[in-house]
Image (tube, rainbow, N blue to C red; front, side):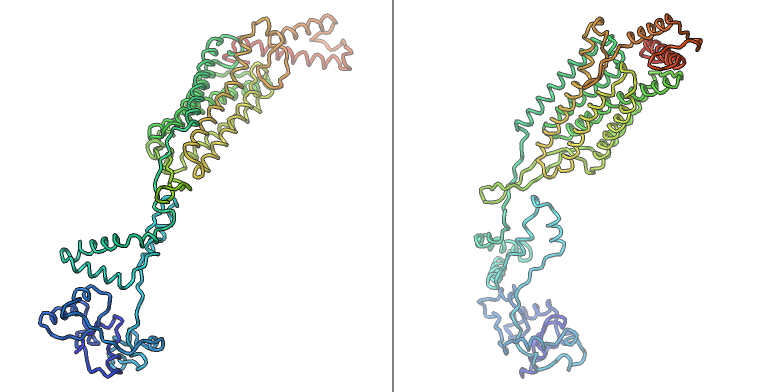
Length: 558
């Protein structure tokens, strides 16, 4: 009798016994007479207990073989004819081994040689490769590459099995782990060759103590001081013509927006936390809104007034409606920030980057930087789009207001403010898009410097000319008055223009030219009296409209 394994295993006992003239047969419950693995182990234990001989099909390395080493029941291998390639190709298939026809199970004589040695295969689940290489390199586990590279010989595996069975403390749990760990400890030098390059790695947290970060905080603090100084000066000169034309309430809102931006620029270089992350974005977005929205509303109102004045139409602009417009937009921005904070709040997230620096074990160092981010980039993208829309709207309104009376015309200064804002916004977007390749704390410092520069330029371009003009005594403002900057040509003030128009009317009347008659002619540059009368009427109409607006520049009724 021979104890053969069940037919769906790679066993060739039947053709070997038949063609090599070994008169044995397996009588197991299997269709081919085979036994299950569990039954074969029980048979061998029973044979050892009864001190009986047994012939069976088995394989090595195997823990059962190691269990009976150096005992009277130690396994003894039966040597058959050596395997060849022709023999291996002529083996019976699984379908033949499990066939009910005995002739199929016997096969042909060429396939009756001994079993060839098999090299051990490592079984690795397919998802391990994808799970490993889908992770960025700085956080990639070395496990897959190590398992792929490790090799254990038959002798080493038998050594592990022998150590496993020798313990006999907790054979199917602790003993196996202990045997493997002890073998690893004894062969650690040879196993180090399978450790992937750049490992073992260590981590280094980049601290927020770089001089550039301190410099960004100092510059932002200086901007806060400048905004405070400009605010005090604006309040001091609030009753001068320059500040009245610019509307003090809107200037105060703009200064509050700049102050918010200063606070945001101060928080950016600080060590990120969930509180600072959320507060920074709130101050920056509300700051730009308070700065640009009142400016847009004011310029849009001036454009409306100018368009109606050109058509000799009366228009009444209620400041209550202008304030309400500003309030609605600011409220909408606040609601957006609230939804953002509740649904996907900004929080501190770690950014890991693999450096070329080596640790004491010759592994690479992973630098860790902390930055502020939400789980979804859509929120920040919406914030940038909103700021871009504000700049586009401001640009269109500045172009439309280029022909407005110079006392109210802020197109020149507005264009330069928008240009500065656009450059800063573009650079901030570039930093956001390439954030993965820029160290996070440096990116925050650069953003803080950009915001501070934006604030400083706004103060210089928009506020300084107004404050300089406000300091000039009234008597010296006679010939001035372009409130813009950079290349504006001086023209007569509004009051002087009125006086000039009256003088022109008196001068024309002294020459006998009547506004109500077309009979008298005047050879002025070849124009007829009708054209001169028409021009005079238009000048007088403009004078009357301007006089009306100057009576109450706050209401601006034509």
